[in-house]
Image (cartoon, rainbow, N blue to C red; front, top):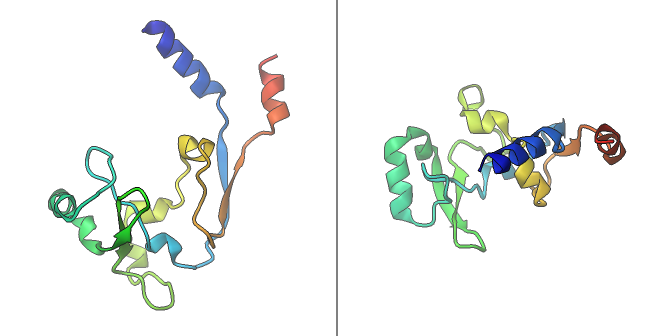
Length: 136
């Protein structure tokens, strides 16, 4: 177990880090077709779960169900986006909105990327050659 933990720390220390670049294009895609998660970090898959999470976090009241993903999770749209893709409560928006798109190495390593039309993109902080040099 200790060896596994040491391996984890070594990989975490030596893993690629990403930098967020670009800027918001004001396309509004990040405010639509949103996956929301339960307190157990699982995607919300039915209306009952959605009603339960609204009880423990009032910010979930800012969304309505707008569809289903290919994998069966509910998709949501923010109630605060206007017809010009502008946030009606921009200065009071939640942390998730402020951090979008959040850099998550596992998400990026597994092929994740910002939504289509998004002006943000991610790049590794170093080239592959630089990482090779570090481990020699």
